[in-house]
Length: 212
Image (cartoon, rainbow, N blue to C red):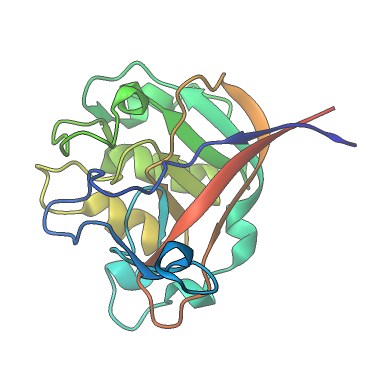
């Protein structure tokens, strides 16, 4: 089996991009510069761990639970089913109950969120995943759930029930995917977090692989 095409479904990390309100923005510092007479270019970056396409660890909502370095990486590599949903606000169980989802699947939900550029101001009325959908997915035995904006919970919900429901049941959570132009279907995917000790999340490079 050969790789036919690699499709990047990550949001580009860049200065000025939208972040969750209250999170630190992105600042890239050029510490050494060839143009300034240094032998090489060396940069550093300041940003939150939940910037752009990223993975949430259980520690994000549960003190004492696994940080990002302790997650089972098999949750973030393997086969994924991409579903396109025409939902205006909250993805509920009724929206996904007839989808072909099998035990062990990763599922990514493509919504109108993928039309939202992160180069603009944070959008509060994005499509999110409701608790009933999360409970349904747990019942189906999925291993990972991905959404195409910065949170699986709604901005105005304030109770974070989707995070609590999925993370407490050992389900992988990927946020900030970029699925514009991606056709629904089954793909091989990779979306691995950085190995950061004690971190509650991590930026990730997410790709889909089309196989011959």
